[in-house]
Every structure is written in C-alpha cells, then in structure tokens.
Image (tube, rainbow, N blue to C red; front, side, top):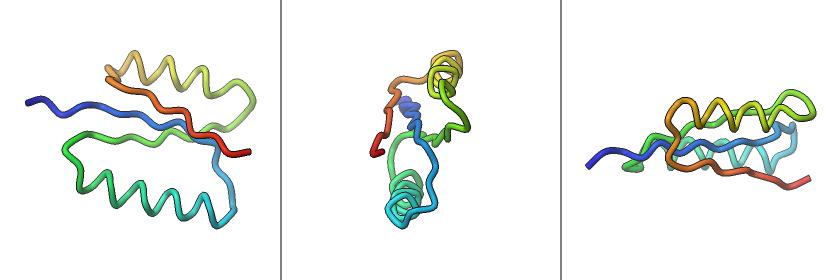
Length: 68
C-alpha cells in the first residue's frame, strides 16, 4: 500500500499554540503510515502558491490550517 502524501499549509506564529501544533505534527508525522509535509506561509496569498506546489508534488490531501 502506497503512503499518502498529506500537505499541511499553515501560517507560522510565535504563539505557544503554534509551537504545540508543530510538536504534535512532528510526533504524528513520524508515527503515521503517511508522508506528512508542513508548508508555512510567508506572505499574503502565499497559501495559494503552496497549494499549487503541493498538488504539483503529487499531494493526495492538502489541509489548510487556520486560526487567526
């Protein structure tokens, strides 16, 4: 069975919630049966570019992480 490629797109933050998210992401990505990738936005509109990049890279799933 092929591992799914799952891309998460998130806006980085210095908050403790984002830090917790990154720690949890790392734990789950290391122990899952899928390939997880975290892409962080750098500017307004960047999420669109990152989504296109993920699709071009063969993403099976793209997850937009919000929270502002």
